[in-house]
Picture 1 (cartoon, rainbow, N blue to C red):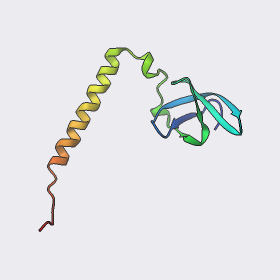
Picture 2 (cartoon, helix red, strand yellow):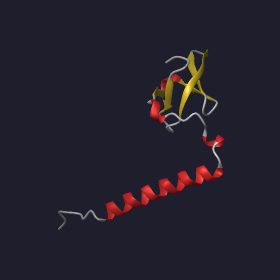
Picture 3 (cartoon, rainbow, N blue to C red):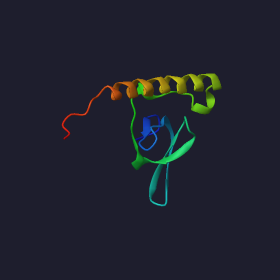
Length: 92
């Protein structure tokens, strides 16, 4: 990975463009522009351009964040509805 690459933090899915790389105490760290945090490069994987959003969550308006939460809530409800239609088989 190098400066300018898109990377995703595996633990949370945060995606950003690498702005800086530094070595400290035998570890390599990459700074992501969207979170302004350094990540151990061993915890990063390459990200696709469509996964990248220049603005971070804190740069988005409250209204945009609420729309995102509502969109995710609808997706969860849809998944739950589909899961409730699955009937167990087998049994005694």
